[in-house]
Image 1 (cartoon, rainbow, N blue to C red):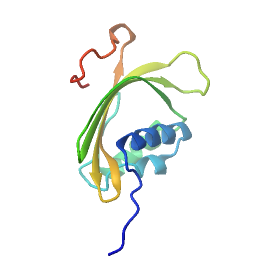
Image 2: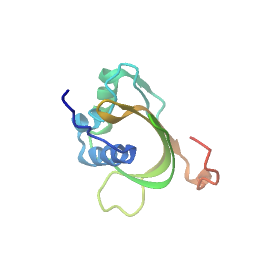
Image 3: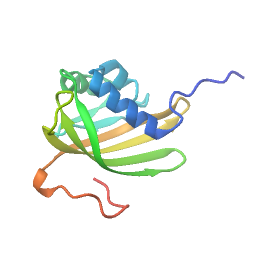
Image 4: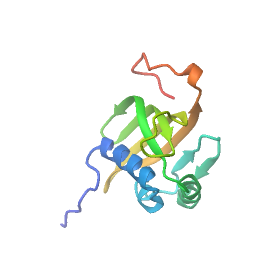
Length: 143
């Protein structure tokens, strides 16, 4: 029986690859990180809900019209055998080497493990307001 290479052995590798594709403005690379399933969903910071690869592709094309630099400020992760949830607050920059963030976002990423390794199943992002940002104090609170 042939063995297939698993692209992502660790869910953290997917998160790192996600941030890198955003930096590069790589829509195809970003889309390749998603689970090969029609039930994938994405909620963008402005509240638009995208379902399936076609809608997520259109959202990524619009979002990545310019490179997007994310810097994690605080992150909580919950990992089981076949699912992982990452909840983070991230600083968003539109230019490399920028000192101050353009704004902050809260991101929840749900990853599932399939035959190819870990993949994104759901992403929910919402804008964080500077005046209500707090570092997570409880390891069980999610966005």
